[in-house]
Image 1: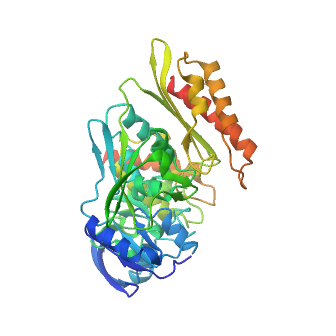
Image 2 (image 1 turned 135 degrees about the vertical axis):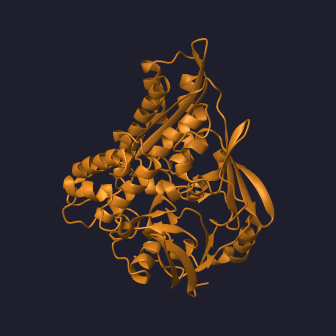
Length: 285
Length: 161
């Protein structure tokens, strides 16, 4: 359980980190931020990066910055930074409810939001949040910055749109309207374990009808994503248990669930529907 | 570089300098280079929590960090909990509530609880249960551990004496 040897780089600025990444991209270089997924993988020697570019001392990588329209989450924002709401609106409350499902307390002291996105585990809560809320992600390389929409960032399990010489600099989450309702539900076999399925639901109610529904599912397919079939059921209709069940059923039908040692595709798909139904009910609380 | 690097930090208030390979975990450096074997290693991949220490006041898995990342850090381990002959309220409560059997997981639970209670002295029982779920105890003493941490939390809020 000892990692293979590697070269440890400690850049002090984003420019230095990007240059190091450019110089070593072809030699299996990895960014080390919180390390709560990468280091165990290295302990098992499933990953044997030749270079670790440790960004923990990079002075110009931010943490959480609350702007007028969005929350900017810099590459050094740790999960634990969301334990207390980072803003007074629904988004702050949503993030502080969801964060309690990520790993365990000590893991949350080190692991980072952007690191979770770049790692892109199918069962990552932050990846689900980013996909459902249409986060805007900023990638940085020696050549400059580019923005990637969350909807096209997650390409497959553990595969993202980041090029090998790019690091994830920041994620911007659009703030939610003051009257936005949100609900989250996940099912895992043990506290802190990977979710077999989870759902995030956000909507507003105008004159008794649901508007701007967002329904995202994670841990079910290779990547978290919004499920338009579920959202279509909700739009324009009055919230209630029967409608939530119908939306859940539509999601269960729409997803292409993965099968693994923990759950069959059939089970996972049905579980996704139940998670959506419960997340919607949670939002209506 | 893969070559050894000199790293300086404090452990329980005492300055330490160690020369470590980059791949050496902080847990191994604490045990092998600092000689502080109270920090235990169970799984070495972040699941069991036996190696939990405080890094600048936050409970972390010391097997999921490299020693080379701890430059300038303030580390606290189970050896630093007691004040001379006086046990820390958590240690006393673990004895009083029979919160340990074989003792392997105990240093990790003590440091986890110390970190959580220092950061969140008003944490409720649900929060405490969630936090204590971070670590594994194979003697299945979780309820006694919960009782001990609740008792220690009350004692710590009441203050010394």
